[in-house]
Image (tube, rainbow, N blue to C red; front, side, top):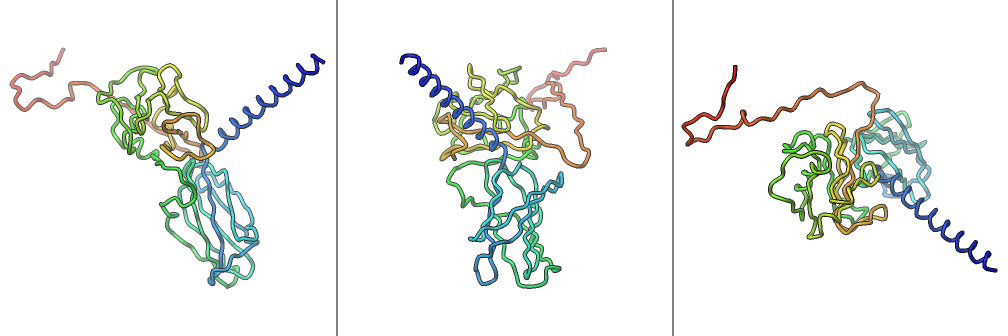
Length: 285
């Protein structure tokens, strides 16, 4: 009898462990992806089921195709961050092409399509990005793009310094360069302690448990974007009461590209004090 009880407890423990592991895996899988969804209608506003909708990544040419359901809706649930175009077509209607738009991690992009009656050989091209206002989820946050990461001045070349761009964020006034985990910048969101932030890289936990800093701080040129959620998190986030910060690394494309850079910082480049009469620059031979 005792053996049966122990066996039952062990089985339950293993089941709980497997569920927790799978939950963490699922969260990690969607941590660096966004969502593209919408509804297909005709000019009268009636929904159109059975429409073939294709989503194509313009950087690597990978495609994904689905068919609208009876409500005329389509959902691409796990879309890697990048730039895409969407086409919708059905016999008896003209083909519709939504030109290039951006998809960000943990951020839904809604693209509604209106099909017009006509020949399938005709095509209507729509330019312009999806609506900026998020009407799909209630979470509050912002996405910092890779262009912003590399264009904005950072005293220590660490991405966490960009958290100061978000509302409700406070951090130390003096930010000195450092090494390893000491080079990270502590920040507090909405009054929560700075060790209560949940930092991720491509959906994988990236927290220095001793100081609450980012455990890994990649080269800024390796960053595709940084997504910060500060309240009303979705089911894919959690663990901490502070911000959910997910860094998405750059992925490959069909074109060869690279970066060459050099950063040199020295006080000899500092501007002279206007009232100073003694030069602080010394030259040795």
